[in-house]
Length: 192
Image (cartoon, rainbow, N blue to C red; front, side):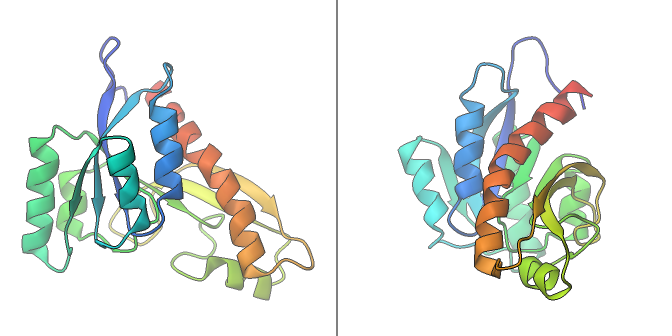
């Protein structure tokens, strides 16, 4: 995915639904000289998303859309095209994008998922890993395709599950790794 030309950084949009901790780590990453990205937009499906505060702090354009139907997705697509967005990073975005949306940005949507895919697609990943007595869980950055959490894997990070780990403790341990993995995945795809 050699989308870089010269010293130009590529415009990306980050989609969030909640606290935006992965967004914050991507913003910090985007400020590094070696980073191939610049975050042009933050998009959310939740106007109460705490992560939207980062738009104000870092002076990044933000928009909230309901993603309820094709019409609202068309508005999002128009907004992304208007802002010359070439890559979308889903970061705790809790809506499933339609096939037509994904087709518009084929090969240009990344997601971070809190499990070692293909294990535990969807929700409640930590509970499921603990219930199944897995020794490891972790996180995965992958390309988004039309099947839930099934796109090509870019990279993964394992996290050991300890006997006394609760889903909350495991979630915290994995989140620390997510913040490192997402920037690493972006670096990886731009060096391909």
